[in-house]
Length: 352
Ligand SMILES: NC(=O)c1ccc[n+]([C@@H]2O[C@H](COP(=O)([O-])OP(=O)(O)OC[C@H]3O[C@@H](n4cnc5c(N)ncnc54)[C@H](O)[C@@H]3O)[C@@H](O)[C@H]2O)c1
Image (cartoon, rainbow, N blue to C red):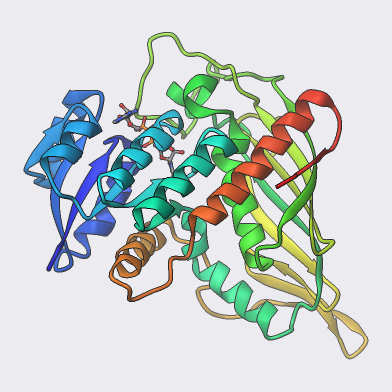
């Protein structure tokens, strides 16, 4: 029987979720959607032929026995909507970041455990061909022991506007919005070591940079009074329990030449760069760069569909969920520690 689907939050990313569900039309039935901005819910329902729409998740969850729910709201509503859906007996795919902080994330995990339902986190980068290829090379020993990694997600002028600059809705700036992707992906590819110590710094030097014309990132949610109460740059070093260290940097705005999103893993046999996918090693006493042929890339459209399929397959017991609530909690622990370290100027131990 087809799984009944509901979507909470009907803005930008909810379209990507819908592309994924539409591709699985034999396995799912689109039943309802909701948004606190009701005209948006109505427009979304009309666009995708969803029969029921609401202005809050509680009525939607009460009126329909849904099997699966996507939570695509602003970050400040992830915990509330996810817990409501889990308590109503739904399996939930919650967008990244899992929550505003670790405390909320732990409550969500607890609600999932109580309900016996699946809570998956939208770490879409885990679904990429680049991630699968990297893990394959690492597992087969080509990279050796990874002791250091560097992850960057830098935008020169890329504040999306809207709620992304309002800390009360987002929980933070580029760290929680962009850094979350590359920190999670790095940790995933490194075999999910546990973070133990973090040193971080955040800055707000360039602000929203909204006077610059022609930037390509725009939130769907327009606010009359744009606010920018978040950092514009975050940087951190994260030490894991296996001794490896990850250095990360993420910006909305930074005086750098190019936007960049890349991760490089340094092993004692080779370095592995994710984008472009390359290995740096030595062959016959010479330094050698290896560029494997094949599509070892990340493609947002293709891999978002893979994420939705992974969720549906996991709910049906046909696949292992690639991004669990535990992974989401671990990430929130790292983000909380980076923000705390930035505030105090000291390194922060992650205590469980
Ligand atoms: N996986 C990715 O690559 C990716 C990309 C973009 C955004 N996101 C995440 O998706 C989420 C949404 O981002 P967006 O760009 O779609 O934002 P958006 O502003 O376009 O859409 C969010 C919608 O949620 C609605 N909303 C807020 N609180 C609600 C509540 N309590 N109940 C119902 N609806 C509510 C808003 O009215 C808005 O229409 C964020 O958590 C963001 O981090 C993920």
